[in-house]
Length: 216
Image 1 (spheres, rainbow, N blue to C red):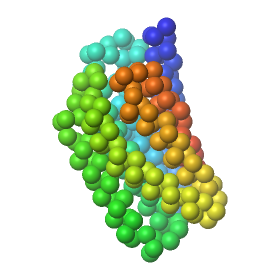
Image 2 (image 1 turned 30 degrees about the horizontal axis):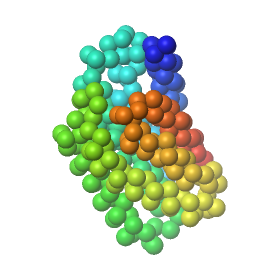
Image 3 (image 1 turned 90 degrees about the vertical axis):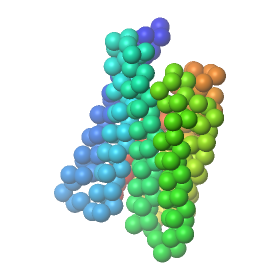
Image 4 (image 1 turned 180 degrees about the vertical axis):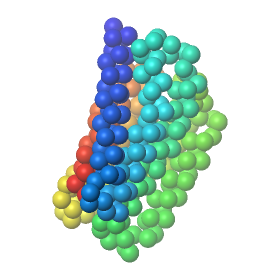
């Protein structure tokens, strides 16, 4: 049963990577390419590429049964995906600045960049134990505090301007839902591994974000 579920998850991951990559290509190679659309395409490509480092070893392990041999690749992939998710939200913030009122948000922009920098430094620390079967739960909390604050800031930007841009009015909700699915995994997945299943709906919220960016 576990192997069957692993293969189903792997198929889901393949479909996700294909869909996210396709959306990124549509954004970057559209006939009416604007700067916000260019940033949206870059965000989609960063997200897809970062997740690929993490998901491709998982997919390979699910179909070959060599998960233990791929432990180091999975660890490196998790670290890279953590960094690219941080970049994704930075780009999403700057898309909002282009669409809304950037002059009023310079101080907040500095804060969002500081949170992203702190998150990146924490992700790069060896104390995360990325390549262990169960990485450090304590450092998982440390590195996700600035990440959550960064994400909530981006959600707030889109929430307070939700009526300004057609198609992006629910971006704030997708961001909050992604963290609602993600944070329990950070807090409790080492103790209760089945909570990791919440990463599937979390991934769906990222696809929802990318689909909304097609409206630019």
